Length: 305
Ligand SMILES: Cc1cc2nc3c(=O)[nH]c(=O)nc-3n(C[C@H](O)[C@H](O)[C@H](O)COP(=O)(O)OP(=O)(O)OC[C@H]3O[C@@H](n4cnc5c(N)ncnc54)[C@H](O)[C@@H]3O)c2cc1C
Ligand SMILES: NC(=O)C1=CN([C@@H]2O[C@H](COP(=O)(O)OP(=O)(O)OC[C@H]3O[C@@H](n4cnc5c(N)ncnc54)[C@H](OP(=O)(O)O)[C@@H]3O)[C@@H](O)[C@H]2O)C=CC1
Ligand SMILES: C=C(O[C@H]1[C@H](O)[C@@H](CO)O[C@H](OP(=O)(O)OP(=O)(O)OC[C@H]2O[C@@H](n3ccc(=O)[nH]c3=O)[C@H](O)[C@@H]2O)[C@@H]1NC(C)=O)C(=O)O
Image (cartoon, rainbow, N blue to C red; front, side, top):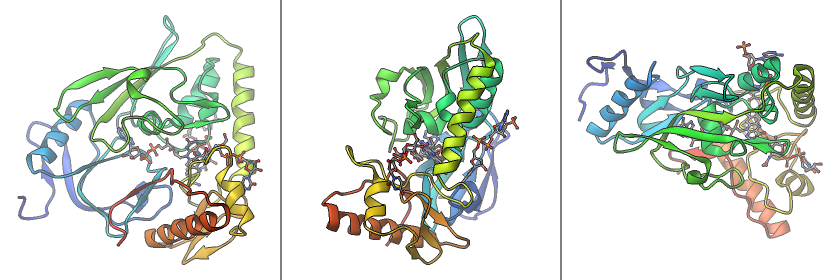
């Protein structure tokens, strides 16, 4: 066991592993306690070293993208939190029409950049404030498109320390689901097949249309984690929640958004427990009225006892 909680530098790397790093600033909900240990590796090699370090001390590992789909406990997280934010390398290959991006690259950046180039295929992703890695794991989607659609491959760090290249069919994609969820497999980069040489004005217009639609139907003015629940087909969670009269309902500083009932907003200073209790309250009301159990899309991490 490590006795004193001071920053550790892994020999031969640039990896600084820091103790007790608050995570609220690393999530779009802006809630959550501290990571027992935290690292944001600058390279794949450093990330592998950090991963091995955690395994050596038998610590659980949590991967953090942009934290845009996370509800982290006020009590924080045990073990090592690995942030991918520095893995941002990107390559637009004109020969193949493929884009390869590091796990920490922001998804909207990809969408805007593709639009400027006149490459079609990522228009759906504008306005989703996640990373490439998070999108591959969550199968992020919107406006009829999703990460799985044109995924060629992803580079994955496996728990045994080896790197593997997986394809979309290896990941058994479904609606907001993949086999990577709930595992210790870490996405390092992803490659998508795009349609290059399209009219940039047209790609830009579609991208902007999606962003406008989002900004007019979803609340972007306060911290949130996007849709809290998956849509229970054939219904939509927003409709079911609105119809039980929960728009505006608040626990502590967590509130069901007026603009979209499947969003929970942090009105300032909310605790993770406020959000958690609100999630449970919404589930109970919807279940009682509609006999439908809403399943959270947001990943709930840590203790909520
Ligand atoms: C305003 C707003 C709008 C949103 N709109 C949409 C939308 O339209 N469609 C949609 O699908 N989602 C949407 N979301 C939710 C969220 O942006 C997506 O789920 C996104 O894909 C999460 O990416 P992330 O990098 O933030 O992942 P995180 O939230 O950091 O992590 C999510 C999960 O993926 C894991 N993970 C992250 N990166 C990696 C990696 N490199 N390797 C292995 N595991 C990893 C984490 O451990 C966690 O389990 C929205 C969120 C917000 C705040
Ligand atoms: N409610 C919440 O919890 C959160 C809300 N948001 C909001 O989500 C919305 C998302 O909008 P979106 O534009 O998708 O993402 P962002 O505004 O977050 O932009 C992401 C990146 O995309 C690039 N970019 C943005 N606009 C353009 C443009 N017009 N042309 C070229 N590049 C551009 C920029 O990269 P570069 O600088 O490299 O060019 C930018 O850093 C914003 O309103 C943001 O404020 C974001 C995070 C959390
Ligand atoms: C934001 C996310 O993804 C979003 C994605 O951005 C949008 C756009 O493609 O479509 C899904 O939302 P959604 O199903 O709520 O889409 P919307 O178009 O806003 O609403 C669907 C229907 O529900 C109704 N609706 C929505 C909200 C509400 O408060 N009340 C209501 O009645 C709308 O009127 C509409 O008829 C994704 N959510 C899920 C859980 O699948 C996310 O996953 O975090």
